[in-house]
Length: 316
Image (spheres, rainbow, N blue to C red):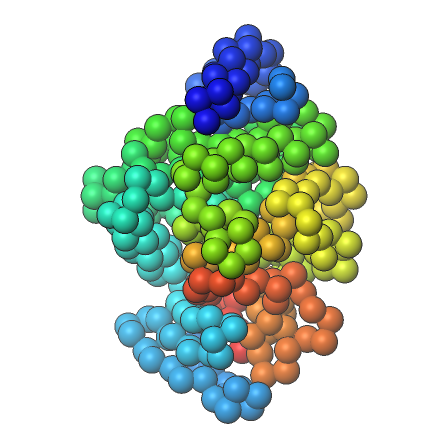
């Protein structure tokens, strides 16, 4: 391990002189391992499930579905969803921070980042031990970090820049690499962090077991950069893969694979807006779609909770 650490240190010294294009000098390039390899409402009864058990608390309805579907919470408004998501995340942060020296969190892009906004407000901004957080991305677009399409750029502006998390605990992709090399580089980084026990390892799959994975979903039912009917949905060898023909621009991305996603201890599926209602119905409704959507393949060895606003749940 000492030898490995020296190699990483040497690589990082080389990286300090690596030219990175950026338009905003205040945006930090925060990964420790930027280039490891390159340098070395009402709910219908569900007849298939007999029925949903519903518990109503203020403006939130909770549906208890079969274990494989997880817990489903429906909120009258996205604002209430964000409040509940903040408490859920902070509670898990406190739980894992008491058990070990790290709390590993995986982010996605899109509207998920907006839904984390309550974490940067009292009481959580002051009560959470941010020093133990380690941030990763379930997928990323292969663009510069200061590009509007970058998931890092979105997360930094709306979330990371507002919390006192150590910059060395944020693991972004190496945007100087092409898609395939960037995916391999990120996987190498994850393997090192599993070996050093910053990331837990699943006893079942021996894959990285992140403490919390925060996932959004597209209107077509895609999660991460795993799209309906795309061959990469079935990838089960790699931890991190790349896609060069994404049906949604930009075309080149990297993404965790489903074996890694499903090794998580906790997954939150955060879905808001009526445009997502058809995909939510396909996944959770009484007659699940015969054409399996990627979101239907989210089945962690731990727990999954669906955070839906009324629009996303409108067809349940």
